[in-house]
Image (cartoon, rainbow, N blue to C red):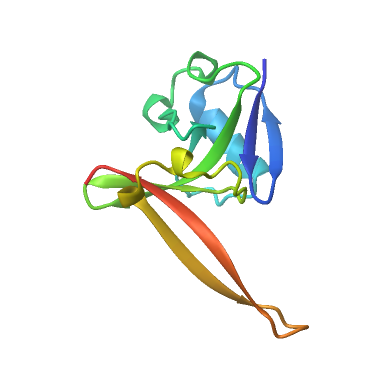
Length: 132
């Protein structure tokens, strides 16, 4: 049994979900270069969070489907809700359908200066929220 986690610039990593969810999330943090204290979550490729953090002592294989691909999310508290930030740079996958209703989409622009040619590039980060 395995699952694929998509993250970064079209990167993927394979994991064995036949373990407790807390162990799987720790391994994902380690293998994907995420800080140990960061709150993370997985969602399917349609944008539905799997709520692994609510089932830390349950086996991840009971929640995740074999051979499925999931997107790595950063989780942030926002008022009474939760904000999910996909840690994936894939414009094809991060569609409006994936991100949800337009009123719940926040786009953050980060200005990145290219030191060699003095060109300005913008990095776009898509965020999805739940709650109010």
